[in-house]
Length: 153
Image (cartoon, rainbow, N blue to C red; front, side, top):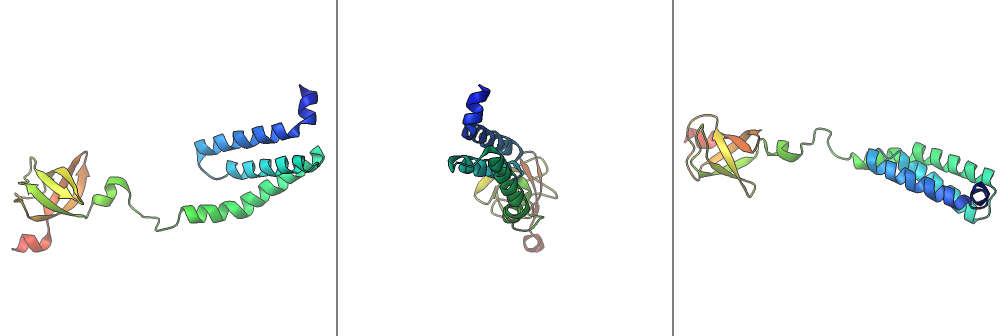
């Protein structure tokens, strides 16, 4: 087995690349994929006929260069946009809602961005057609308050 591996370094490099790719899929930190790039460099060096010591040097150099130069640029592109960007249900807070069924402290229905949500009112009763603002999300229920201009009328 070891004789075969010594004669076929390509199998080692391919195995390392696949191992690094699997670990990268688990961690998602763009570190192990850079090592995988180094393993591919070792694979290319083997196919080019390089000695094993030169393949190892190619692996190390390409891995270090990718970690030092490619990873920071890739992370910068992945994290583009404001750091305080809201996602999931947090993005609904502050959104406008239209009351579909009367909403009071115990329940009702509102439409938020095309989706109908069960809702509770923070204060008073909201009538169908009235505009409201989502102030919080409690499980699958939107907590709403009347919009300031509709509260004045």
